[in-house]
Amino acid sequence: MARIVIIGGGLAAESAARTLRKEGYDGVVTVVTDEPHAPYQRPPLSKGYLRGTEGVDAVVLHPAEWYDEQRVEVRTSTAATALDPAAHRVELADGSSLAYDSALLATGSSPRRLPIAGHDLPGVRTLRRLDDSDALRAELSGGGRRLVVIGAGWIGMEVAATARTLGNEVTVLARGAVPLAAAVGPRMGEVFRRLHLDHGVGLRTSVQVERIAGDERAEGVVVNGETVPADLVLIGVGAVPNTGLAGAAGLDVDDGVLTDAALRTSAPDVFAAGDVANAFHPVIRRRSRSEHWDNARKGGPVAARGMLGIDAAHDGIPYFYTDQFDLGMELSGYPPLMAEAELVIRGDLDAREFIAFWIAAGRVVGGMNVNVWKVNKTVQSLIRSAATVDTAALADPETPLESLLS
Ligand SMILES: Cc1cc2nc3c(=O)[nH]c(=O)nc-3n(C[C@H](O)[C@H](O)[C@H](O)COP(=O)(O)OP(=O)(O)OC[C@H]3O[C@@H](n4cnc5c(N)ncnc54)[C@H](O)[C@@H]3O)c2cc1C
Picture 1 (cartoon, rainbow, N blue to C red):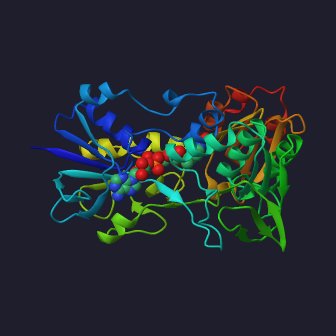
Picture 2 (picture 1 turned 45 degrees about the vertical axis):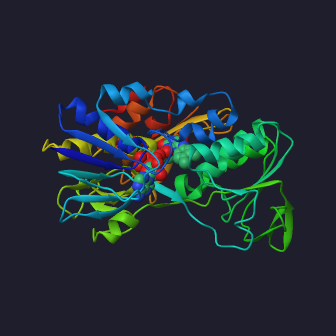
Picture 3 (picture 1 turned 135 degrees about the vertical axis):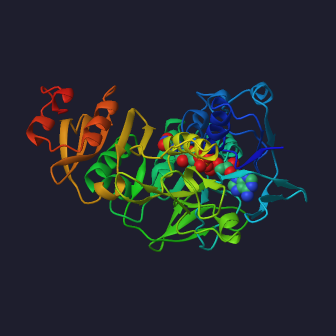
């Protein structure tokens, strides 16, 4: 019998399974996930779900009946342990194996480890899974705890904001001079630095974390010879793609599983999507790996169509969003091009109500709307048009953005 096996239990897996049925695939669809839950999405885990303003409904993607209706078999708490592309077979941790016609690697990524003394003490946590968020929520929901966050990336900054909102004392330790500089550059990182300072988060920048102190449990983090006291430590120093299965199977791997624009890997009938895929982007003509929700949501369907022999390309503009305190933001753009671009600001930076545009060779290659809504589609259209723009008009809030679309 025809069978497609999807390895992973996140949004890339779910969106692929959903698309297979939508496109009329009638064979067996099996999702194999090592988590005890059916596929779910992660953004609320550091925001509303962690804060307690959103329930598990905001996290799970479908009620259990949906999987029956769609005839999608989900094997929870079951890790795929090996992939044999020649035999078209996936080995599972329970000793069984599944034959496939096509397979999708949607294994996501895992928190990067920080191999310093004390990293494994009780009270030191990372955040990736629903169960991680539950555990953090149990410790932070009552307020009054001292949380030290190591790392000033998106997850660290989001958890810092949520924990602070819940009434905890929060310190963020950042290696760089400005938080989030790697993602949005130093000038936009400064917006987030001020936001957190204004809300009472302690931000220690340009520091080197030496170790986590404590005997039975984490009691503090030692930075530059000084101990920052902690009841709880969150390590948020980035994520690494889960490529173990692909690497062992002999697939081409380099910071993710390498794929073409249709998300085909180097092995026949094996695709990759979501955080784990390092895909060739046909517009910027280079590989790019994205660790964002929208990339998983759009990549799964592209891979599903590819598995059914339908022409498809993963050629969208990378999109990301965050919510921290009273700041909501959407960001669209090509990170490799944004890295060397100049900024044009439209709106009020100090009031945290503006759109920032990244301009390279006179063209918009990225745009971030902060507390300004219903504009990101136009921002994407500007990027997609690749036309040279009048930067004075772009900076002028009186000039309608749409009028800049040629
Ligand atoms: C706390 C948090 C907040 C986030 N917030 C945002 C946000 O605000 N905006 C945004 O754009 N992005 C956000 N992201 C990123 C976004 O959630 C990810 O890009 C997205 O989850 C990627 O989906 P995925 O399906 O590729 O992988 P994942 O969601 O990581 O799912 C992969 C699944 O595969 C399972 N798996 C791995 N190996 C195996 C195996 N061998 N066998 C079986 N199962 C396996 C994993 O356990 C996991 O369940 C956030 C991420 C986190 C962790």
